Image (tube, rainbow, N blue to C red):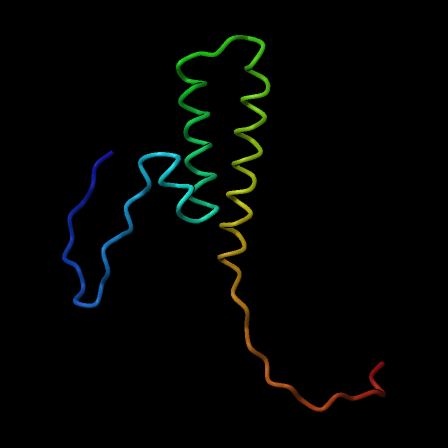
Length: 92
């Protein structure tokens, strides 16, 4: 993975560093904790796990990933403010 360099804007804040441990992630947001747990499960899976734990670990990764995606999707939803108007009861 290559990283490209760029100039930063005067009002730009530095990106928040990702938690390095599950304990650090637990002190942060729910999403950070779930990402740390998903990554830990994935690392364990990559190293190799006994056959009797494989299915449960894959299921847990899938569950965590689904929850993370729900959080991300909810954060992307923009709510548009619509001013109140006169309600026409005859339209019903």
